[in-house]
Length: 261
Length: 264
Image (tube, each protein chain N blue to C red):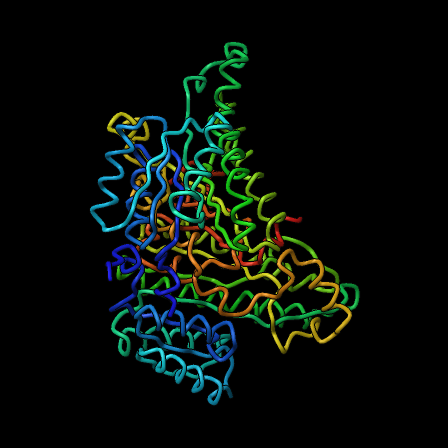
């Protein structure tokens, strides 16, 4: 069997990776992808009370042949994030890679959303990402290297009904990614994003409506929703050593939907 | 296994502009991921050198001398690939480049010069896509990767042909992606930033100090991105542009390194 030197150059052997939001399907799939590529993983939650789901993620990571350290935390609390990032250095050797899979869908009409809704949607979808990047960046700047990937959505680029705050928060993540990429470029940190198309999420309130789902599937160029594992290849590329010249970029994984708009 | 999804074993990849520079590097990189190569370019002797490098990796390489601006020649290239290699899994539309219209004022550019540039950079990619699509549709599978440029997105001062042709490449990518999504053909686009090919260009770009990461790109960095996009690891990525530019397109509204003064 001939060798595959190019494929080997994508390997994450010996790297330490933190995945925040690993109790959810997107974070779990991200952790498994990085594990398959050889990284040691610290799987951290977005919310407390998720021990069982995190353990399931850790088991999937171990099944992929990698070390998994579990950390139940609240990503909305600065001290928690800070301690999680410090734990990475201790338990997985070094914080080479960080994936922020922080997402809490919100749908509601703009004219009746109250101020507490704003605070909640922006905290869960944006402030957590901002704080996570800050804490991860603090350690990576000290190391002089690192790769961060923020997972956001195509809602960052276009509007949809009844999702004003959610679209705005997703856009905030996208442009935070660009601004941090510029600010930290000479510090050796690459900051990139992934934008998922319409995800196959059992929890999604919009997809619970069968008629909506049917018309959406018809509209999608590939007539299918995005599965969490569809993001794996792009995630691996962005965090791998071969992407050393890629920063401030976002890869859309949506099966050509954005070509329509 | 995600790393296995990157392997291109048994896949037939046509690479245009494979006689030198980036195209040659791509050919060797694709062979290093397991693909068999169909190398196309104008000059046979250069293709033979590329083929020798590919064969060193243990993979086959068919050379097809081709003028990519001649649609009959491009069709013959696709036919040769199917006849000799059996199928076409991947097309890398890499041929093209700048010309000496860059830097000229708009009045100085002749019709002939404009047409030649657009033919080389944009029409060639259209011809090659048109030539391989029927085979890919028959296979119900295919990957097309177009090479554009940051100038496909930003304007270029006294740089009409290059900016317009590369912008066209981006739109060609999106239209192919949308049209053939249901045939399981994914078309994506690489958007390189500064990749100097010689000492003069390195000097021109001042060693990359105007690039956010502080250095220019290296040709060897483009191959792995193309391999990723050509692989099963990118099966749901379609119609997308991936910039590989050291942060160039993420900033640019201030000169690189300019830091707004902090308020007291």
